[in-house]
Image (cartoon, rainbow, N blue to C red; front, side, top):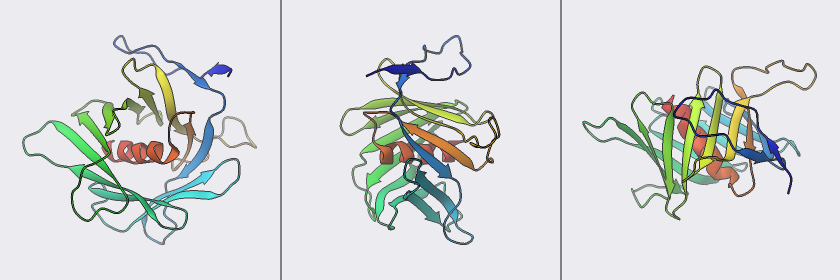
Length: 197
């Protein structure tokens, strides 16, 4: 399979080299709006078909504490919760399958140190990722560990097709998910990333 280079991000002295991404990425459009009036959430479309594939609708003021990722029909795929621990400089998030009423065993954990624009992600299956972002430039990238150089998903501000270089708006993003990464898992990490900023 032919690999093509993804666009460069600013390099830091401590940063690892950027990998090349697959040209067969699944492209999704993320609109940071709920389908419900006055709700905070996301509406996610498949670029190739135009179909709605994910949605997040949340009326709660504490959306940064608990969120639900749903499919197009409203079935809850993941429950995403912030785990608070007293006197800790680490921000922790946990992802559970389905709609979780009681605390069970999460299948994904994300941990971020205070003041750092990156977080570590681990899954119950043993997969590990690092998520990095720039809130100012509007991009996020997920790399598979341990090397941290294989790009498996990325989010960028979405450009319009009619006018090259024209941004559609601050609430419209493009999510590219490369082979080997699950789309719903990538979207859950995007939601965590948004809450961490």
